[in-house]
Picture 1 (cartoon, one colour):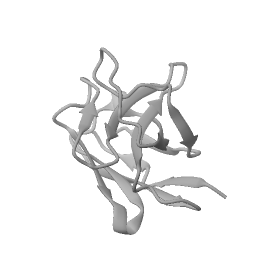
Picture 2 (picture 1 turned 45 degrees about the horizontal axis):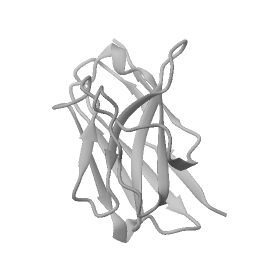
Picture 3 (picture 1 turned 180 degrees about the horizontal axis):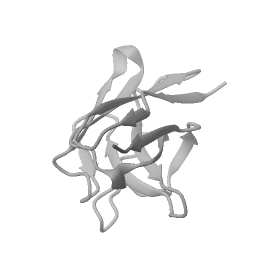
Length: 131
């Protein structure tokens, strides 16, 4: 059974940091590009960041550029999203998603990944930034 599981969410104060993990089971992430998306209450899902299957290419939404870093550890079959300098507007459910094999990350005009082409989705982890 192909599955993506996010973890690492929680409550953090403004200015704080969290690291999200996206672990795959039932398949290898080696040949899949992985994206992170988020959805805040009452808002549409937004592409946050994506890393190509080779690890050599990344993209970031303008709203998180310079604060978030995406990385992957294929040996652990896991992709990470390091989030620093968190703001209340970063509060959302964060989802990871995988493309089909050998598909690269595509970028929206806002810089983040495109929703279309993501074939596998996790159930999300909640990040709350509040004092």
